[in-house]
Length: 216
Ligand SMILES: O=C(O)c1cccc(C(=O)CC[C@H]2O[C@@H](n3cnc4c(=O)[nH]cnc43)[C@H](O)[C@@H]2O)c1
Image (cartoon, rainbow, N blue to C red; front, side, top):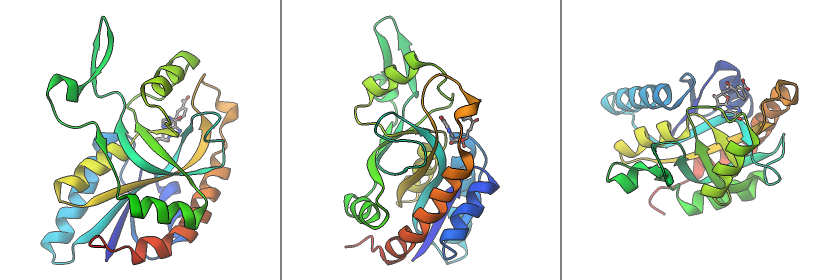
């Protein structure tokens, strides 16, 4: 089965390939729209070429919610959530689904999530997709309260999962934590550590991804 891994930037793509040379890996750009567009393009081209993909992985670095996801740790999504897709109202944030539109959540196959966590030692939990990086404690608390158990905040997963779902494919997100979610502090970023954790994680995840059977 062919696997497509979608990262945002080339450094993440190189970190994934260093650990797992098998899957095809692309750097789609930052944000959910770029991620969705590039994922849809790759999946469609592969299907039209008669070599369709069977599984899509959103991968990269991300912010970790404390204390569950410390810097340098790895997380596997049990849900991929569009955390800011909705409307602000006097009563607070309302997701688009409550307004009668679309989706705000994709759930990867539970057996795949379990197997990836067992192989890599990663934590599992919701991974949030946002269009604005959190920069305050208040915003971090608001997101954590709205999404109990949230581990990670990043910017691409929901776009990747939407494109995969449009072609009937499962998607899962694998993120290594580069910074805490909270007040902006560029000195707290540990991008090198996170990219290394991503390489190590994909080294262990590769056999699980490559042997996964969507029909099991
Ligand atoms: O300028 C800042 O304060 C800032 C803080 C964290 C990340 C950024 C980025 O622009 C990186 C976006 C890029 O990296 C992923 N990422 C990494 N950490 C986070 C985060 O805490 N929240 C959201 N996204 C994050 C993201 O998936 C993008 O690909 C700037």
